[in-house]
Amino acid sequence: MTGALCVLTAGPALAADTFVEVNPSTAQAGSRVNLRASCGDNNNRQADVQSEAFGRMMLRPDNGFLTGSVTIPGSKAAGDYPVNLTCQNNNTASTTLTVVTMSQPAKGPATGGGGTADGSNPLLLAGGITATALVVAFGAYRAQRRRTDG
Image 1 (tube, rainbow, N blue to C red):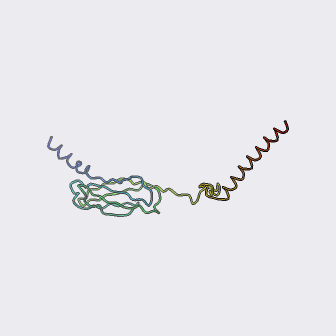
Image 2: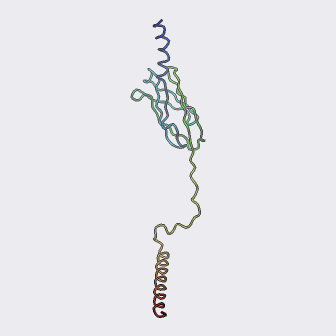
Image 3: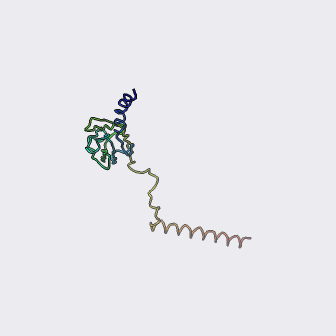
């Protein structure tokens, strides 16, 4: 009975060694993702990966795993996409890749010219100096007038 139990559990152990990972598992359309997989005892042969997120590609042996990189097309719609691994020994595995889109605003809000940001506009500088001089002169005039009036 113990021998039969070992035979029954040996099959699923190999299947557990078959997996596919996407890193990062959430990526922006137009970005590159890395894939890493295992086909159990068959990692010395390439394997096929397919997804609507990026199409079909082959993973190649790399230090005991199967690896590859792929770019998600920039026009890919946001959503969850299955990533399916098919090994040459007929093992399969799947995971999910979440594609997000982050739209960039066409332009910022109309809040001003932005010309004062670096202080290099000579007209603004001259206007500021003139306004400051007028305030000082008016203050001095008022102070002088108070002394002579009182």
